[in-house]
Amino acid sequence: MSTSTPLRASLLLSLFLSSCSSSEPESDPAPPKHVVLIVVDTLRADHLSSYGYELPTSPHLDQLTKDGVRFERAFSQSSWTAPSMVSLMTGCYLGEERLSLPQELPVIAELFKDAGYATGAFIHNPIINSDNGFQRGFDEFNCPKVSKHNNPTKGYPAVEPAAAWIAEHASESTFTYVHYSDPHSPYGPQSEERQHWMKDPPVLSDELEDHLRAYEANPPEKLGHLENSIEQIRVSIAGYNDDVVQSDLRISQIMDCLKEHKLYEDSVIIVTSDHGEGLWTREGSWNGSHRRQQRIMGKPISLYNLMKKGHGIHLHSEQIHVPLILKAPELQHAVVESAVEGVDIFPTLLELCDLPRPASIQGRSLLDAVNDDTSWKESRPFAFSTTRFSSTVITQDGWHLILPNQLGECQESMVPELYHIPSDPLERKNLAEEQPALMEQLTSYISVRLEMGLSSDKGLELTYTPTNQDALLALGYIDDGIVEAAISALSDRTVESMLEYYLGSACVLRLEIARELAKRELNKEQLEQVQAFLAEESSQVIYDVLRTIR
Ligand SMILES: [Zn+2]
Image 1 (cartoon, rainbow, N blue to C red):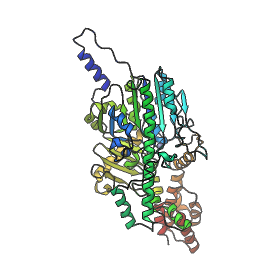
Image 2 (cartoon, protein in one colour):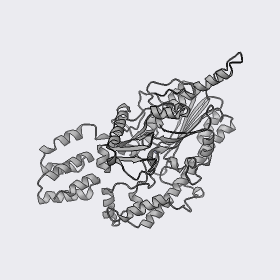
Image 3 (cartoon, rainbow, N blue to C red):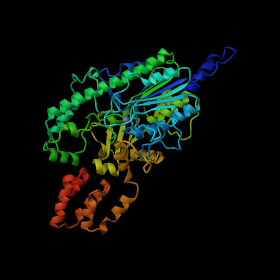
């Protein structure tokens, strides 16, 4: 553990020492009255000007950064909203992907409410809803409804509702959680006058364009027109950047409100994101949906569709490296280089506000890192993140292991990936096979976190978006014993029954069936059936096994 003195305590000590000559020691400064937690959904750190992006996407955040601490290397605990926010709100790691807050654990808003703060949530992402328990602890809870006719991540109200609420409660202590979603796809502001870069998109970075052209030079199957893809990617990234500007503007409305009511100086403000975004940084797996698209549409798939655009499955840096900016009354401007995590936000807010820390919290106060970066690095050797497909660790010296689980290997054709970020920031050169000892060490780090983390919430009655239901379906099959039992019984099955079993089975089970079929003698009719599966198979790993069956 860190031996550093918490900032507040060291500050008090220096106040005490400086007042030794006078007869009365200074009294403890009152804790900050206002806390504002701002999460901008889907915000890559490297697309903010305060994090070195070449376009001025975040002028207001840049200003806030000058008043506070910028954490250079902050990582979200997952690469999609629900699990990442579960972790952030509980201060606990994830042992499995989960969507709802565990009933038995205290969450941030509850502690502030219990301490007498008025609590308000203003959320523009429908998965952070009350079905998932996110309303717990909030006096005021606003979350958009999903319908066919509106996109809840866009169409934000003209008057900033969180600012209005803060103004209304200016004389009380407040905890405000704001969750903006402008950068979430579809990219680009709805209103044309806000589409600044979209109208005249800047060229792609040399590195990305070179990468796209190199892939095109040696594709696994025929691809569509490359120049069209490059143009589409250019416009989409420009739209994403326009969305970042929108979020930055909304943040400025909150800052203006705090300043107007003379609350800014006495406020704790944290700005972060729940995850990053792919933005065509790397190619996805060439899977059956691409082949089907080629067959059904009669035209080749394009690089625009083949490259990873969104988030939620993979854990490369672009999907988990998020901004983290902390402004608090006692903090001077600084840049912290240590790797820190979403779980650290909860204990930080508690320490800054002198609130007791529940035993359930696994994160650490970021003030420890502000006080003593070196000691933080020694006592927290890595950051961790997970999805239902894979888990990852990033060490303090920049090694990044992404380790797939069974589902990731099967459904997404994932393999272990090891990158050295300082020498390879875009994670292009996989060193997994060259570094066996390091792989072993980092794999053990992953096991430690998975063991201590929250378990999944599968089986709970969750009833809303298709995304939620799809995720639950995906969560359901691995751990319930059905797949394991079925796999162990495969060798006793006839070819006929395996063929019957194939369609409708989960990915991991289809893989085992394909492997078993490859060992058997098949007649002509059965081989035709395998050919039919081949055309539909969405997993590259399974596809490759099926192809060997003749
Ligand atoms: Zn999100």
